[in-house]
Length: 241
Ligand SMILES: NC(=O)c1ccc[n+]([C@@H]2O[C@H](COP(=O)([O-])OP(=O)(O)OC[C@H]3O[C@@H](n4cnc5c(N)ncnc54)[C@H](O)[C@@H]3O)[C@@H](O)[C@H]2O)c1
Figure 1 (spheres, rainbow, N blue to C red):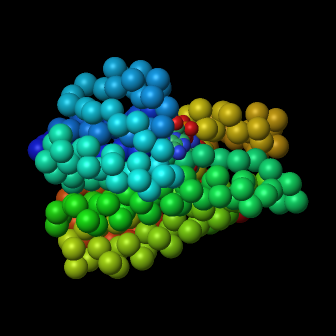
Figure 2 (cartoon, protein in one colour; figure 1 turned 135 degrees about the vertical axis):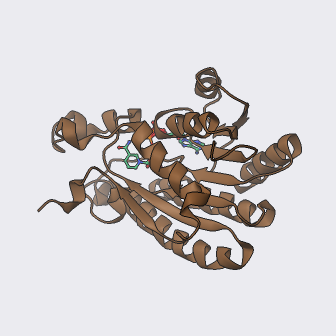
């Protein structure tokens, strides 16, 4: 029970990796605040988690809503030990069809959402706390038609390093994971996967629980000397020529 007595926020908790992560933290003793903007899916998720949970409907791309969400968690549970910045979205459009508004739509969730929670974490989390940012292999290598997503995830790794440096004197660790293809709605809704343009062998697709295990490790005291790291969790996909 690595998280007994701790309170964890998981964003994007209503599905996929976020749900698996919330289940993992709850199974290891944490009280889990499930944050998502989809209230119906969030209620369905909460029913799938055994343990002490709280549902918080919040658009992570809205700084005021993030501050209010953290305040709600602190009012209810009195502490915050772990934040997992997992909420994310992808957009599929070639560069010549993208507008500034499109970029803002992706960056506000995939990059600024993490920043808003890191800011609140730095204001409220005690020494010994941990933040894990869910980036993507797209931060390192990418494909056509996902420029804002790839850029947001690359910037999230940079933000992870900046926050890690500033987190040292506060005793707050900040790390990132880079999942490869994971069996979630985001993967199967990807039009490039659906059409076969992006080919995936079964061995290249991980389970949400395998990503959750890596997140839980980085958030736990077992990773006490790991700060500012970016951990690939992709079954070796990026190693191949
Ligand atoms: N599935 C993959 O293959 C894969 C690969 C690499 C990285 N990732 C990353 O993992 C994370 C989780 O992805 P997933 O595959 O579980 O996706 P998913 O689409 O299954 O889940 C994403 C969740 O984020 C929520 N969300 C979206 N916008 C939000 C907002 N503005 N405010 C609050 N919640 C919001 C959605 O409602 C959803 O519950 C994302 O950051 C994604 O970029 C996924």
